[in-house]
Image 1 (cartoon, one colour):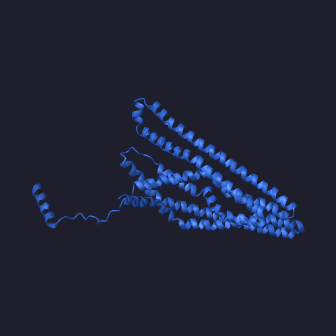
Image 2 (image 1 turned 30 degrees about the vertical axis):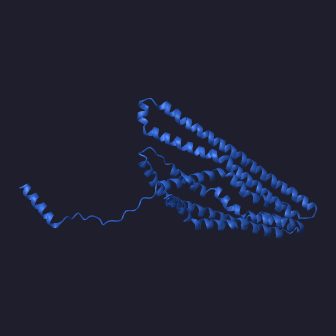
Image 3 (image 1 turned 90 degrees about the horizontal axis):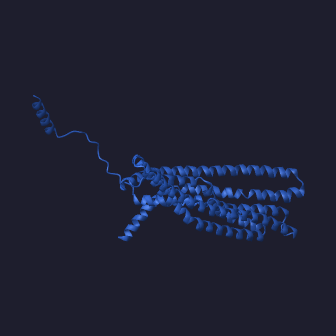
Length: 354
């Protein structure tokens, strides 16, 4: 019995997951475009390397012109790819809304009916909006770009093994900062979301009984109760934002510091003739580019947590309130009774009139 109930719950929870899986091809297309975008992000380092090692040593203006034209052309292609990727995710978010909005709208009304009007909240609709905003925001782009970090690390190893080791150590430190950010803000954000829902339900309940509250002079007390919930919400959100902001500042400071240290390291290697002067600048730029996705994930981690909480609430709602079973279609009634009874009724009516 318990196993059957668990399987049924998994089937219900998969309703939201099924909607996301139906958009799998769109996510794969966005990831395919991310591959070429991240390959083109190697362009600044390659351009800087060629300028330092070829143009400055040869003094050839024609080489500089051709390199610059190629760079501009490739940047235009990269811009087009990024625009296409963003459009794919926008269309995907709209499709997800079309798949779920009607179902969630019905579930919200069913929840209000089942609770006898005690639960009146449009929070699930806001949760769907939260998911859509995350899907079209910079946070999701960072998750698409992060898997291509090994490409940058490999190129840095080709520049010099020390560059590669620095990139690996820096990546590990940023991952630790990301885990710290998750553990430091998760509890406060969950409590803040819970307080937000309580405050919203309290406000809706008060508005539903606004006339009674006004006549009985209960408005000041109701306002105090709502402000207590609101103050608790603000305290939790401020604490979570403070922790997240501190960790984001540490992450950004570390990334900029390590990028400058890579420049100094490159200068040291160039002095000892282990790399060319062009690799000094190219290595520093590429190391900063390799660390950028992790830094952006840390900066947008709060939005990711909010989207995850919204997903969990929607999954729970769809689990508790299953979709209505579509009834068997019946033919439209024609309004025709039995012929004999119709004639008897007509005859009886005429006799009654006479």
